[in-house]
Length: 106
Picture 1 (cartoon, rainbow, N blue to C red):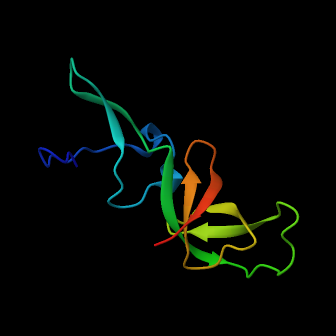
Picture 2 (cartoon, helix red, strand yellow):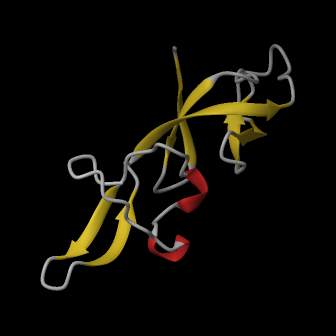
């Protein structure tokens, strides 16, 4: 939806650069051909914040290495996160690489 005109813009999943990180209400940049008003694609911000909905508990004391564990995000996609990240926490993700960036305080 255009935030100024409130016009709905329909996009196919293939035109979005990282659809696995897209959630309802997320702001994206839409590329439009101004000559014919055709939508060319959409880009998510470089970094977004998502909630971890499932991950195994981490092991204490294993912080010397950059060990990652799988975590499922609110969009349904899985990424590797450090052992200290727990369920219910917010994390920042790089949408270009799909990697964990940092934990976010609420």
